[in-house]
Image (cartoon, rainbow, N blue to C red; front, side, top):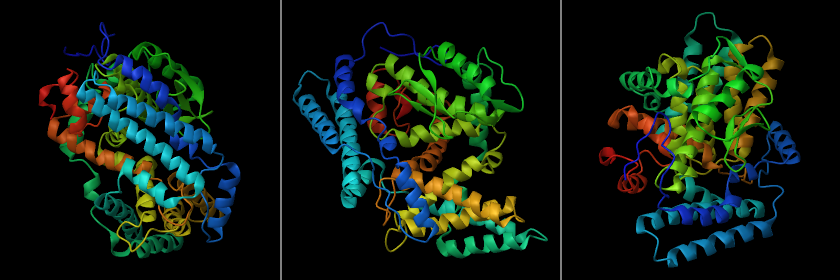
Length: 467
């Protein structure tokens, strides 16, 4: 059977997926193992203590807070028992069985990582963390450092520069030193960017289909205008029953365990940012993959094959980038800088290119210098505002990328996938053509992962020329 899309969506299936019964039993075992990254979130008390420690040049404990270890052990046992039943079941197609084994191994690793964090067992935490996400890429790390250092260079050569900016930029360059690589590695070739952008924005292309029936006003988009747009797209264009829910902070996301798109309680976003992030990244990538995954030949693709996130998140960020006329325009945004900052903090904490992993106080010192530089550019005459806003940026970042650790070295590696996936997916688009990015909407699989692609070719979801 060949699966052909009708617009954004695969048709409603007329016959069951090859893993219909297996997926149902997997969901029952897997459901409590979803979104471990949220379960690693710091408690308010731990977060406040960490911020105070960093302000005083000290390390902070960021291990998992309120965790029921017996419940975690029960989760672990449930997943392991399900895996053994899968291995013993000779009726399951070998390709299907292998894809599920890889995926359940990742689920078990996530639970193991959460248990290790709650116990303060950092050797085990880092082992499972790296098993899932892999070590950060050193060339990409050095490229990100070069990007920041290049910004510092540009500040220093500007005529009549403010002394505070000179001081902040000079400090960043001193800290980065000879670790710079090549920022050019992070950017797509202009021709590739333009081809992918044209493919997304053409008549009846991705954004035309995604935005059908709604009108995006110019200027800023607020909640009272944005929410009805999001609801229309979810209900009519994706034919989904997902709702909208308030996010705990300022981030956007999709919670498949709750069947909601999470957005800030209030928002006021430029139109391109709203379309790129809220619609293109979250709804038009992460939720669309879920819908099509449930309609395709393997329902496992609705929750994701193992380690799918790297190309999954990179592809979603590309959807944000193509809202802008050139990559250079997108590369100047705070959004892209934040993706760079995540990778820099994770890599530095992991000890990439260093003698040893870096403690949280050391990571704070580096990222604080970078954040002060960018904030000083905005408020050079207000040192108090600069210090406070930079402190907030740095602590928000470290809360995210160091959670789960004891603060004495290493990071939670999940957020390395944004920059690494972004770079990888531009290469996929350059090699296979811009339609490869669109093809990723068929389910949660790795765009450049042959372990995923070959079975999906066999089951008719992907054409044979994909490998």
